[in-house]
Length: 96
Image (cartoon, rainbow, N blue to C red; front, side):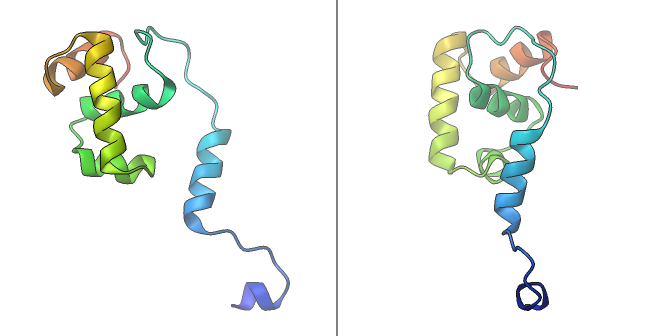
């Protein structure tokens, strides 16, 4: 309230997070197997053991969108499950 009264600009925290993410310097190029940037984000989080709900919250997307990305990833990588997706990500250095 005080900021608004004093004429300062207000930005919601969720928009601030999105803006900061869009301004970050991308990591060096790696073999992403033809995955989109968002699919790669999802793969990294799967490899870190995150659930669909945690991934959705972190990426500010719905759980259904996470499932859609995972389905696309499985098709592109011919992976049968999350374990194979995680192993693929680790082999390519996509996770710490």
